[in-house]
Length: 263
Image 1 (cartoon, rainbow, N blue to C red):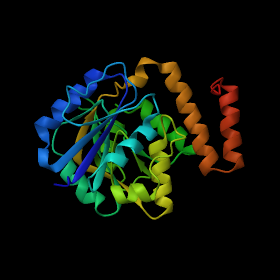
Image 2: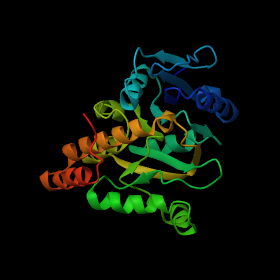
Image 3: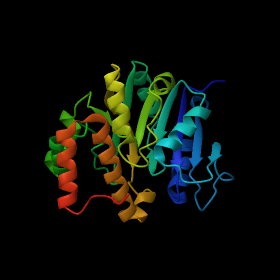
Image 4: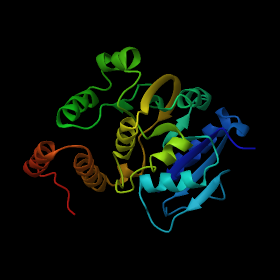
């Protein structure tokens, strides 16, 4: 039987999170509704014997986007649901998301921290002005003002939804060529939504569907590397989607602030 949804998770050295995700899937998702594909990016601990899934083992850490693409190639579902290992299901959100995805939309659920606060799991495409505004919101994410805005005024069709929990039709994902594997970590989700919008495929924020995300992924164990990868992905995004002036402004800022990544 072909599953409605293929859940794809890229795992790298956060085994406790992955086991929690597995438990939450068993607790909330009907088994006949989905398949689970785990792409192990050469982690220290192979969990294949502990998980009920299709377990793909990479010989090296190929990055998040490439890992997702590898999972998508093995998927059989009509919809692909990319879910980070540090997420947990708190309800069966995949039915609701699939109905939205069927409308040729990239669907993202409402994302909560374990303590119940809402996350900024959507936003505008990257630009100098947009990033300043988004940074301001992120600094104030837990304030009553921003929490109320997310809960009551969040855009139904933001520019992008977060790749921590993102559903898309398999046929559309293939048509877009999947994630750009030049993005090793960060902003591959923004780039995918940008390229989709250029083809008339928009994103949808779906607060009726909820998932929990602890942000305890492997990147937190090496913050310097994570920062370097973020800046590399930021530079790549601007190179792909912006002109000379925005690129010059970004590079000037990174040089002056000492944040230009090493090659």
